[in-house]
Length: 98
Image 1 (cartoon, rainbow, N blue to C red):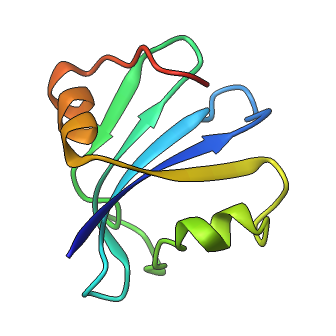
Image 2: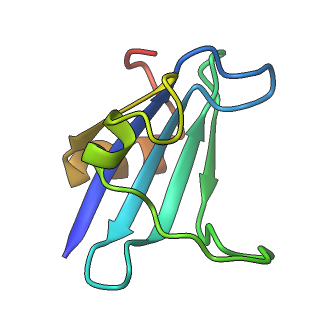
């Protein structure tokens, strides 16, 4: 099963995404298929393989875990529909909330 997560990063450092979208395979150790970084200036960066070139593959936490602030108070997450993820992926444009 695939789950789509929108992660808000309040006070993200300059050059880091303020919003990150994840396409998570819940049946494969919660690994992400794709992700989208969204920056405060509205530009997006599609990442077709989140684990390309990484040393350690880390599963994506659940929305509940992210909202429990295990990774910090500055993170808040919610589930989104596949259509929202795909629309941003295709258009490379984000006009939603930060």
